[in-house]
Image (cartoon, rainbow, N blue to C red; front, side):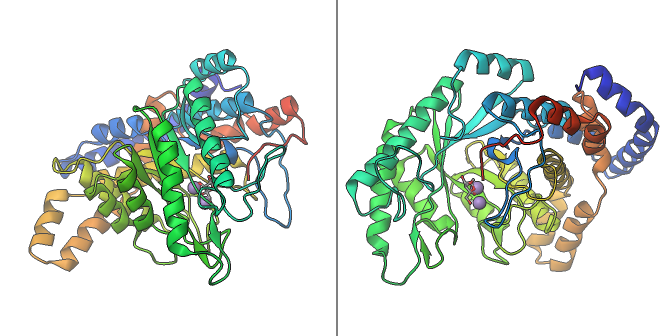
Length: 426
Ligand code: PSV
Ligand code: MN
Ligand code: MN
């Protein structure tokens, strides 16, 4: 449905205006001794993984309003990510959630990966829901459970995730625990941590040496008194105890209001333990809104830390895995994912354009006003022509959401998969 010719045709009427805007910005940047094409090259290289669980409409505990044309199996999920990648050239990988995405036909999936130019980014374990046929319930926890048999079941599930991932060429296991308590005194806080540490060590030992484990933290939900891994400090200490292949995953939605996330990102890089991101936005809680829709300045400041650390030879952080983790109740999930990727690329472009030498000078001389101006100069630039140029040079659409609509992608998916197709996920 989205052939190269179709995308080229959709770009044609937009091209003249795009070129005008791009050349204006390129001129402006070159007066500041910055190279627009170099930024475009960086943007083309930057890839953000798409979560398999975000391709269908989510819902709340009150209701769900299906949109139609949702992917019914892993093959169709790859198909959806393939469509996004065609449109923006920036989403060449998919994160899987087990058991929602247990692969059946490995050879067929490999074929599809080749066809769409996709890799499997990570496998995510699920010990937050009971599954049919499972011997024990996770009602009172999984890796931290008081009973050894429950912990063992959860450890084994994570080991199974690794073997599914290996079959598909993944090399990352992401662990998020819903473990915690709702009432003071319900759980022995220190013992719950120690049991978790021991369970994670069992999983880590079973992990191939070229894999990494990402450990996510979350301050609340589903539990509202305590979570076993509530903060980056707990994730970090678990990673330290496990070994060099365990790193912290920062989900932007998993912070209390006004948390200085960019500082956490800076610290973790300093310690060489920043493993990855789950990008999203949030207003009141883990709402999984469009990335950058609520706090674009904060997203820019996070990228500013990433670019700063990448340019510092003294920082030896491993490669960071970039993923989106969102749920869509109102918008078409594919449109929202395109918007998130666009906001992420924009924040990255702005961070690349920060006059770093001038910033260091201002910082060293304690010139707070000047330092802030330097950041604002980069943040307030309209970098959309750079992002659009990156899309164009990678064979995508100058305006992905517009092209998605003009090509009637959703309508065709509804025709192929039906109005009532339901995707697995939250
Ligand atoms: C939990 O809120 C979380 O952010 C974890 O990453 C889960 O794996 C994901 O959402 C999907 O449920
Ligand atoms: Mn997450
Ligand atoms: Mn979350």
